[in-house]
Each structure stands twice: as structure tokens, then as C-alpha cells.
Image (cartoon, rainbow, N blue to C red; front, side):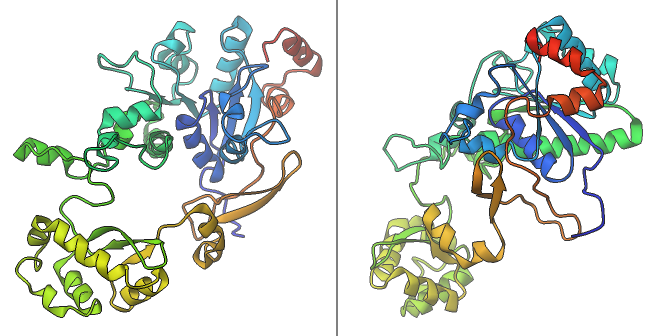
Amino acid sequence: MSALPQPLAGIRVLEIATFIAAPFCGSVLADFGAEVIKVEQPGEGDPLRRFGTPTECGDTLVWLSEARNKKCVTLDLRTPEGNRLFRSLVARSDVVLENFRPGTLERWELGFEDLRAVNPGIIMLRVSAYGQTGPASPKPGFARIAHAFSGLAYLAGEPGRVPVVPGSTSLADYMSGLWGALGVLMALRVREKSGIGQVVDIGLYESVFRILDEMVPAYAKNGFVRERMGADTVNVVPHSHYLCGDGRFVALACSSDKMWRRFAELMGRPALGDDPRYATAVARDRHRDDVNAIVAAWTGQYPSHEVIARCEAGDVPCGHLYSVADIFEDPQYKARENLQTVSDPRAGELVIPASIPRLSETPPRFTHLGASLGAHNEDVYGSLLGIAAGELDRLRAEKVI
């Protein structure tokens, strides 16, 4: 283990968000040394505690995994004393993460301008369905709505069929958390030079909309509306999922003319490499159904492991479509330690996805799974704010904490 401090050691983050989007930003920051204080409603806590697969300790698997490394305190921001205590925490912190509907914190007099009056250097990440501005900003929304509004869900599924969920209903949440972490880090960098804090404003839909490659310029220039293509990819073929002789699917990505020629050779049909119907990406796209039929006929002759071995020998990217059971058996996942086995006093032994990215000198560290509601009240309010035990008892009895 490196003797260097973690990258975000000394940074204190207040997380008053719920579910996944802004909290995932907190998870990323906590993995790399930030002190993330998760602020939850007394008696209720984050709804994520009850979302997903329940466990014996009362919290769900998704909570235990995604709330890792955070300190958990309770505080009712809507009460006068809760408001005052939160401001005291803000004065001693660097970042606030929130994902309330726009205007909510302002009604509680805890908006950015209110907090900046307490701490001019405070940075606030604001994640909402549609962002803080625009005619849709007051509307509620979750990741599924973001997938729809961004244009992603329209593309997911088979042609002419009902659009499907693009892999995970939480994709936009996790992506917004990643964009949020990037924004917070850039804002911290600015503050290092200027001392000035700022707002990082993200709409859930924007996190997905930004990664839809050439969809926007293609429509603006040519009026091209991309439609559902099933497993296929726009402009490129063969670049899809193909059934093999053992009933398993492989993903194959043949993304250049040179690679197509290599692929034609390994299929034992080298003439296809120079056939004018298939020799160029444009030509293959024009004859997409024919190309896919040729590839499917070839993969169907062999078990999937042999298809992959032949493709690897010909330097054509190919791999199994994995279930989570496959992931647990794969040597690459083991070698990279992507599956982290941890032990927790409440939940016992659990396997969680390991934190990324991998830093050679200051890797992420795991301290604990998602904690119980209010587990760190004494630590935070007592040690950080200096509140005596008797006063904490009163605040608890009055449901301020």
C-alpha cells in the first residue's frame, strides 16, 4: 500500500441526495479518500435502503454496495434546528451533493446562495431530471424518463418492436454520478486557484444525451433519424451478436475494412474481403442483411469458444455475452480483482463490484459497506460540531436528528 495520501483526503462532502445519481458521485469521491457524510431523514433514511434485494440487516444489497465508505447521519433539514445544524456542517465542508426537485432547497432557505453566504468556497452538485433551468426543470423524473427524453430508449430494441430498457433502468443515474464527480473535481481545481465555489448543474437526460455519438450532427446535416437496430450498430457491419453452434451468443466487432479482410480469411472465404458488395464499410452497410447472414452461418457451425478462438487468432475482437454467473467464473475478472469480497458486522460476507479507476500509487480503498441509519451521528455531531451527548439526546428525542 502506498504511503501517499489518497487523492481526496481532506475533502469533506455533505450528501443530502437520495437514490443513486448524486449519491453515486459521493461513492466515487469516498472511494478515493473524501470524507462523505450521508445526511438522511430521521426515522426514514434514504429510500435506497429499501430499494432492491432485502438482507437480514434490514438494508438492501444495493444500499450496502453503493453507500460504501460513507458516514451516515440523520438530520431533518426542514426544521429550524436542522437547518442551523446543516449550515454549521456546510461551514466546515467543501462540497454539497443534492438531487431534490429544483426550488426545494430554496424554499428551505438552503439553496446555493444561502450556503455560499455561510461558506464562499462551497461547491454544490445539483442533479435533477431536467437541470436547474428551462421549461421542464420543475418536472420530476427518474432514469427511465431520462432514457426516454435523451433519445436512448428510442434506439433500444428490435426494429418495429416496443423499445426496451437499455440494459439497466439506472444507467442515467450512474452516468450522472460520474459526470457529477468530474464536475466536482474541476470545481475543486478552480477553487484551489480562486477560493470561489460554484454550482455543478446536471440533468439526468443530459448525461445520456451527450454520449450518443453522431446522432445529433447526422440529423442536423442530413435529417437522418436513427431507428432501432436490435443488436446491430449504425454504419458498421458485421458488428452485432451472433448465435453459435452450442446455443451461446458471441459479440463480434469488425469495425474496419482491413479487419473485414482478416475476418473473411478466418471464415475460409477470402474472396469476400475484396468483393465489391462487402469490401468497404459503406458497401457492407448497404448489404447489411447479407453480411449478417454470412456471419451467422459461419458462427452457427462452431461452439462459441471455438468461434472466439478463431477470431482471436485472426485478430478480430469477439467475446461471449456474459451473465453475472459467467462473470464470477472468468479469470480476467479474478486477475483484475473486479469482484471484491468484503466482511461487514451487519451483513456478513458480501461480494461487491470493486471501485475504479485503478491508480497505481493511490488506489481506492474500502472501509465499510453502507452503514445503518444514523450510525455516525455521535462521530459527526460530537467530534465535528462539538455537540455534547445530552444535547444529542434532546435533538434525537425531538426528531431533529
